[in-house]
Structure formats: structure tokens, C-alpha cells
Amino acid sequence: MQARLAGVVARIQSHFDQVLEPFEGPVGDAMRMTTRGGKRVRAFLVMESARLHGVDMAQAIWPATAIEAMHAYSLVHDDLPCMDDDALRRGQPTVHVTWDEATAVLVGDALQALAFEMVSHRDVPARADLALSLAQAAGGQGMVLGQALDIAAESAASPLNLDQITRLQAGKTGALIEWSATCGAVMAGADMAPLQAYARALGLAFQIRDDVIDVTGDTATAGKAVGKDAKAGKATFVSLLGLDEAIRRAGS
Image 1 (tube, rainbow, N blue to C red):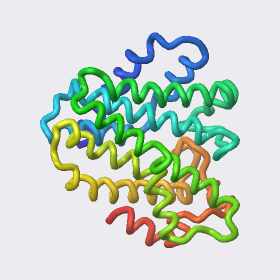
Image 2 (image 1 turned 120 degrees about the vertical axis):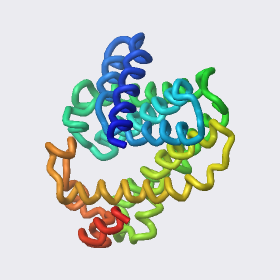
Image 3 (image 1 turned 135 degrees about the vertical axis):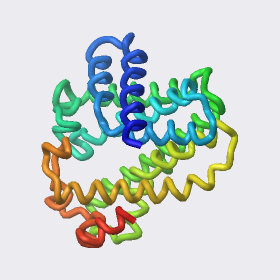
């Protein structure tokens, strides 16, 4: 499994290098910076889902890279001062710190557009279905909804409860995880249901683990600022469940 993950990481980076080569100026430079590094979990899920359903890897590389571009866009915008106001991402200064806020907005916009360009590539089976479902997962009923709920929670009269934080994270984190895990089934014209439940559980575990790292990790390990949620008084899975129970749930 680790060897396959390492192979996907290398293949995705190589594909990004090729796709982004023509992009010029500060926006192009920032797009290249933003798409380097990361765990590539979403791309790995796309490639494994494709492999499970017999989809050619040369076809699957396009949506696998697309979901990483979409994820990168979300991070660039999430780091902006009007959102989470983070100065560090993947161990390096964020786009708005390295350049400026206007460039960061444009870079996020360009990465989102690139995601749809790649998922709509002529070599991708069921590309119209994938583009539609990606728009739904990333938009106002998915990732954007989760981020909006997160922002609203900062000024709410009381912290979110467990059901509310679960709904928030199902959009903010889980929607793109679910899209990634079901991508192979869509390309193969197979039933998505068996992978949807798995993907939802995985997305939840992924976010709980992130909350745990925010409490137990350090900036060098996480590659970003830690402890911000606790300082802001935000509800997280750790604050609601306790550290030990959060770790147990993430592992189950």
C-alpha cells in the first residue's frame, strides 16, 4: 500500500509539472508552488477506485490530478485573512503571504478552473458525469457549504454540537473524499453505493485525525499552525469527544 501511495504521489506531481508548464507570471508560479507536496490522499483514492473497477490508469490520472487541483484551490482560499488567516501551509508561507491577497484569489480561481478542465479531458470516461458531481461536491451543497458553516460558527452564540460539527465536516472535508473514492465506479459505469459508505467514514476519520493533530502536533510536523481552534474557542471533535475518544473513533 505504501509503495502504491508513493507511486501515486510521484505520478501526480509529474502530471502537474506537465500541465502547469505553460502557465506564466505570478499566478503560474503560485499554482506550481501550491500543487507541490501534500499527502495526495484524494488522488490515491481516485487511482485505487479506478484500479478496483478496471479503469486504465492513463485515464484515471486526469481526475486524480483534478481533485488535487480542487483541493489546492480550497486551501489557497481557506488560508486568506478573510477566512482562516493562515501564514503557513505545507511548511512554507501561504500564497497571500508570498505574493498578496489578490494573487491568492486569482490562483484559487485558476486552480478550480484547471480542475474542471482536467476532469473534462477527452480521455476521461463519463467526464460529464464526473464534472457534474465534482461541481456538486465542491459547491454550495458540499465543500463551500462546510466552509460557510465553519465561518458562521465563529460568531454563533454557542459552540456547535456533535451533529452540527459532523455535518460541517461532511461538507468541508468529506465531500471531496467521497467524490474521490467513487470516481472509479463512475468511470466504469458501476454502482457507487458500496464505496459511498466507506468514503463517508473515511472522510470523518480524516477530519477527526486532523483535529487530533491540531491538539497534539506541532507546526514542524503538521506543516501549518496548530492549536488555532482551541485558541479561538471553536468546537472540534476533540473538544466535544475528548482526546482519547476522538483517537478511538478515528481508528475505528
